[in-house]
Length: 138
Image (cartoon, rainbow, N blue to C red; front, side, top):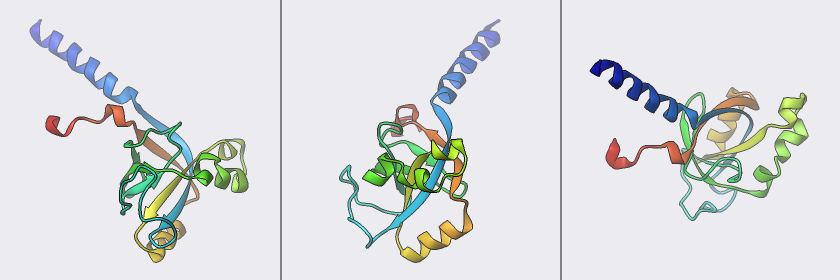
């Protein structure tokens, strides 16, 4: 009986953890050091592994899971919040409604290489900042 209660408790925790993870269709664009400011709109120094999002849709600090890396949402910009890239090149109704995620790279060469190797639209997993464990819990 005790193990049954433990199992129910663990299943409850698992469902809470997965409830804050979403998969969304996104138009992924790239920017790099030297193209814009060195600091994100949140004040953090930009580095590889950062990306720009619409903070009304994806909270700062959230993890964005790409096929090759997990990035942290730390920046925004007018083209991201207006979804300009999705509206201009989307062909289907879902693509036209897609969010825009702008991934940061250290160099232009890295950004262009990544863009050439990946599709413009992809399904990304979003792990909200509120669902991430505290560092002392790890």
